[in-house]
Image 1 (tube, rainbow, N blue to C red):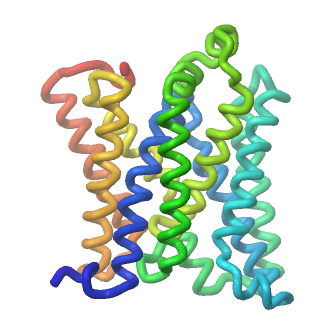
Image 2 (image 1 turned 90 degrees about the vertical axis):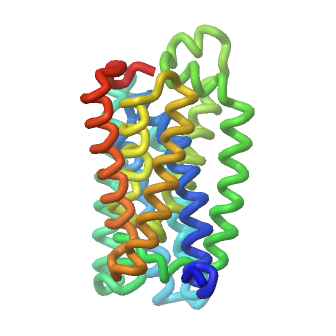
Length: 282
C-alpha cells in the first residue's frame, strides 16, 4: 500500500502538494511575463512576518495560540500585495522598487517578531523550509478554497490578465479596469504563496512559481502551452519531491526545488540540442 494512502499526514501533504503544484505555476506564468519574478520572495517574507506575529501573540493570548498561524500570514501577505500595487503607482518610472521595499519591510518585521518571541521554534522552521508532516487537514481545505477562487478568477479574467501581463498601458487604453484586476491578482498570488508554505517553505516558495515557468518557456510554442507545461512540471516536481523526501528522509521543500532544477536543466539541454525557439518567445 502506498504510504500516502496509509498515513493521514501523508494524505494531507499529497493532496495539498497536488493543488499547490497547480496553483503556483498558473499564476507564475503571468508573474514571469510581467517581469515580476521576485514578487514571490517579497510576499513570502511578509508572510513570515505574519506567521511570526501570530506565534508572538500566541504567547499572550490563548486565541492566537489555538489559531493556525497561516491565516495571519495570509492577512500580512495580502496586505503586502496591496501595498506593492500602491507603491507601483507612487514610483511610476521605477516600479521595480516596490518589490524590494516590501521585501525589506517583511524581513525587518520578521526579525523583530521572532526576537520578541524568544527566537526560532519548530513551527517556524517548518514554515521556513517546508515539512510534509506539518500539513494538517485544515490546511488541505484552506488550499482547496484558494484553488477554487484562483481557477475561477483566471478563467473569467484570462483575456484581461493576458493583455495586462504583456502590455499594461495598452490594456488600460483599451478600457480594461486594470486597477482592481491587478490588485485582485496580487491578492490571490499572496494567498497561494502563503498556502504553499507548509510544503516548500517560505525561503523556497518562489522557486515553485518561477522554475516551472522558466522550464516551460524554453520549449513552449505559445502562452497557453506554457501554462500547461508549467503545471505539468510543477506537478511532477511536487509529487516526485514528496516521494523522495519521504523515502530518503529529506526536507520536502529542498527536494521539490531540486526536482524543479533537474527539469529546468533538461529543458535547457532539450532546447540546445533541438535548436528550437528563442527563450521567452511565447
